[in-house]
Length: 244
Length: 154
Image (cartoon, rainbow over all chains, first blue to last red):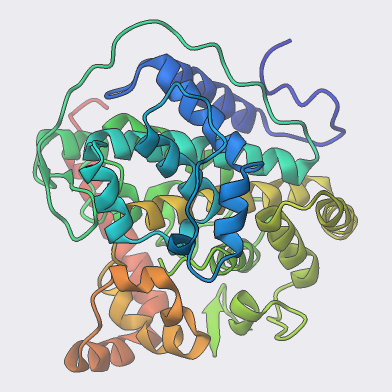
């Protein structure tokens, strides 16, 4: 049975969505720029573990997440800062702070490792959220593929985010963003690891709109009006207390 | 506080308060917002109710699209909040008044965007009614620069 076949659902799941999910899962299993395939799949497993993690639940309920100490319910295959990052981004994204991010760095998680981890976390969150919405079981995590991480760092600049991003005038940025004059910060955010931006672009196009078309209020899906799309998007963002 | 899209005006308070408190005027708003809320909270019983209601109101194709949009933004908010990106200019200035009125400025991640100062705030107020023309124009310009930078033959 191929992955993401949605066999038990009597719903018209577009083939483009299935294909995007399959490619995302294949990408998840492959060695990345800074993590091996096994480590990427372990990060994905932590995203799912966060849903049942007692510490995450206590922190989410607390007035301040920093007031609650303890250990995450986690497998021992990842360094502690990576586990903390995966669990917090998955379970309580609206209360992440620059100080929290810098603490992870001081504990040994490099900016590049962090950015790639964010890319893995959000891919799993995205696909699992869709499965929950559709009433489908979560897709089993893929078997990791062997190989080493590429460890290639592109030319980057500080752009006002916590993490550096691709230098806008670099050949890498021109290729990644197709020479566009306007690239939203949310598309630049993961560009320290260009592969994660490619993943973002593909999933965005399959679930919502091409990243490049988001600022055009005339862009829409065939099955929903743009006001309907933005009502859903805005409500999800507000419940997550996302300012962006 | 209202916003215009596709030639109609909608109340934006539904985004922060939910449609029970502030109807937006968007068709099928109740089912769409209930689905969005259920996806974020992740409770099985709430999800089942929201799914059934959205399917009945929207039909299968639109329900799947709505679920995909909700899931997409579960991803996007985490990218934004985990990387600490600021809001893009000139949207930060144009949306300053709206953000204050809707209470979005109180979100923790607002700290990632520098405060819009007086002159830019005034410029944002002036540009705000033009946003529906400005944004498609910026999108078109961006498409043109992408086409122009494409290697010949592609």
